[in-house]
Image 1 (cartoon, rainbow, N blue to C red):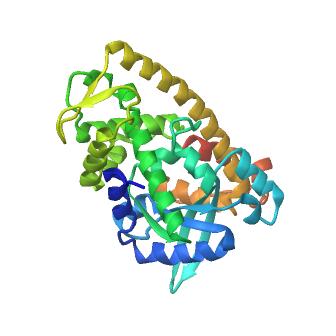
Image 2: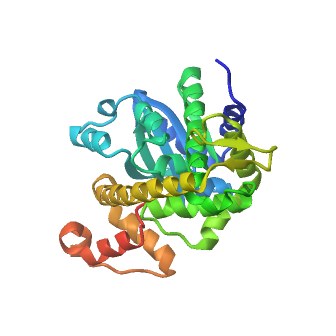
Length: 319
């Protein structure tokens, strides 16, 4: 099989070193989910900073949900509304490592990186830098590389919807990525400050410039729209009507994405172990100080803890 330049770039990046804490936690996850574990991907703020301060972000790809869980209800939730998201803590040496772990089957991951998936969460994550810390076989490694490359093409393929004013201008990575991340966060019910979004691009400008250009150079990334120009100065050939139509499609998808994100946030209350402690820890980091709750609220959060629940939902803390 011929490997595209984009896939080769992705394969190289996925194999780059990761923080030692993330590698140690990856081994823990592979053991925790057992023989069903096919691959472990690491991404997010700790990778950008190359440290373990805060919460490590992982996707664990599995063969079959029924092989992962002892209870069938968790497998049912993972099937109906993937991914399931868990919060795990482990002590490594003298340090307590915290991780947010999303569980997806290999089949669902392959679907979730495509334009037809109902929300943008997965393909938006994996257009960002990531590391493949565990893969059970070479075939699985090749499949993950292919799927992450698809995530990039899906992301870049939305360019006409997000930046219609560029119809007659070269596509500029420094302008494209912050604008694009703002759109995907809006589709997730997850607002972010402009500085936070700009920092995503500024953490890896070479990565973003390279994958944007490579994706635009691949036939089919923008559907039937053609791309002209030289590397670093690509132009999208489309009419104003085609850009407008792409924008209308994205606005419909954005509304659907918000609905699914809301359901996912509610589901986290049932999949997170001790989500109250985690949510309070995150809220306290945002607020810069301690937040007190009663013993009754901690014991029965879904009955008496609605002021805290509402604040967690409003600030999108369980994410």
